[in-house]
Length: 167
Image: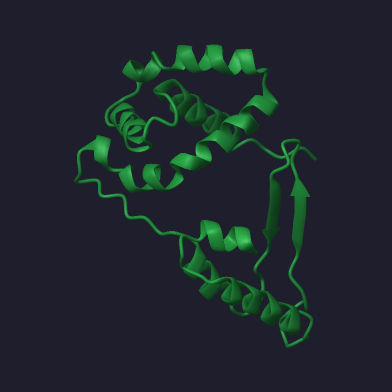
């Protein structure tokens, strides 16, 4: 819970987070109509010791809680492409290292480095405005990653986002 407070950017106190968890615990197993009585969650640690916690917010306050904790962004398409994703890049710049670790768990690190170097040259093949948007992400993330890594991340997303799940 201290981690939630730390990464919530000062939006919550430890007491508020504990209270939210207590309220959930006190109300989750009541069985009002149209409610299954509980939320599902999972807690796990990856091989680097990062603790991961996911909870399915399927109780009455879920939309309010989600709205209070999930940042909302407006991407202004009237801005120059390099500036459109500035706030998102700034807010998530420190998380990119964890994404790279996940990619390196899927593929050998040397391959990731080589492909990142190669993909850094692919920006000239992207239609306007995509390459400029990716260059802006690199710029506003404060040097936490390269253009090749951003393009690699986009390509991996494109290759995996719409695949059919195995039956």
